[in-house]
Length: 353
Image 1 (cartoon, helix red, strand yellow):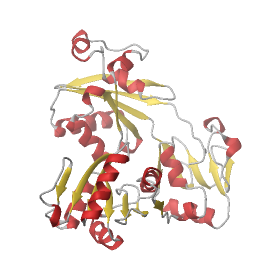
Image 2 (cartoon, helix red, strand yellow):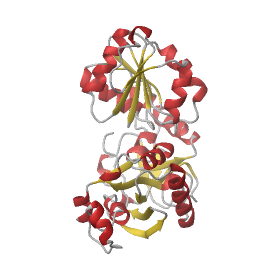
Image 3 (spheres, helix red, strand yellow):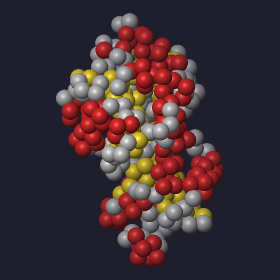
Image 4 (cartoon, rainbow, N blue to C red):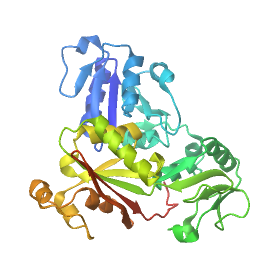
């Protein structure tokens, strides 16, 4: 995750710097609107000349997490014109400049704002102020369950309907193959598992198909896209190549779990841009790790001499299948780019989220 922090006072900037130094796992950039700090910027810091709403629009376009150190009203006015959907909006958090409270105000579950708030609380001792009903009432959150289990869901309105039943103390009926559940003995309060396929309408169905009558359908993100490309490849070329490949294979974008490659490509702009645009994680692996992946691959002595492994895209795609899987499309090459696709196995867990 990439995070953009904006402050409005000198004290707020000091807190932003503390976050940047002390909270791991996030690629932070720090911004300020405090004119007194204009000539005192460090690396990865910048003064914002434009209106705050313009700044927020650009950060949300890049799919960054936004941290406002200041009043909630400032954040609300900045982000309001740019909201799209609870399934795709950037996570937004507000902190007071003394670092006492951390308040997720947008995309608490699907975007990870609540999780990020708890991370800040853990490392900096802030008090998290969570306002999502399922968290406040300690109820099962179907959208968070979907995110943690690599499931995409539809229709969006079903989230509110299912959550409302749980909050009212009613049970929800989930239809899923029992062999897909890792921990049925630990079902959360309010959840009942019923046979799959469902013979009558249910609250939730977890399935690879989209043909059952349910308030909410959850489908697994099963496809791992392995890629390789020449250094400095244009983002437009990569976008076109991947789009055409997925269309040829009949794969929808929401079914893609990860984009994967060798660690030499972790800073490849075209791959990072594609990942950020579609909110699909981009994961890379060392050559030695890819070389240990077992299977029959399209081997290239030139690639091995160059990057230390005989094939990148096929090996990376299979490496991304943590629960086992198989290649459904072997290496396809075009103009300095390669792609392969693996289909991973899937299971779900109701482990405390």
